[in-house]
Length: 168
Image (tube, rainbow, N blue to C red):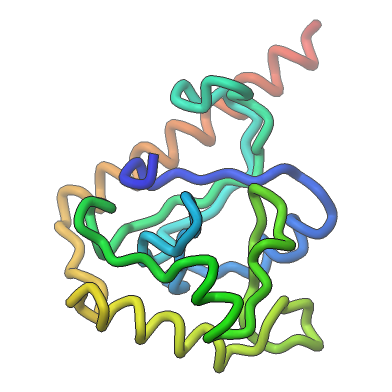
């Protein structure tokens, strides 16, 4: 699941407000299995009710989509920042967080969960612990075009679905 690059969140007010603040190129740390296991850059985000085939329990239940470009292409051999470390070393009570949540780091007056300084430390430590590069890898122009075409196709499919619903 980590390597697929598509994540989704429920469309709650809290999630939507934080999701709307995510900009293309934003740095993202993914938490799962009791630790941060992946560092990524945000490629894009979109709202979609189209079913996602590999979300087997609820293929349409997470309409706030984010498309991520991972720095570490796999979680194999990754040294995660564990939940215990997040709580004791970084002061982030991750055990209070719902299963799917957006922890936004930045200006707390604009809705961020934690100050940006905490994220900077997490980001630097995760990359250093796993010998990962701090800069995004250059985009392959062909892959970039393929992704743009996929985004356009998704938008067309969503519009077609809206038209079908209106016709019914």
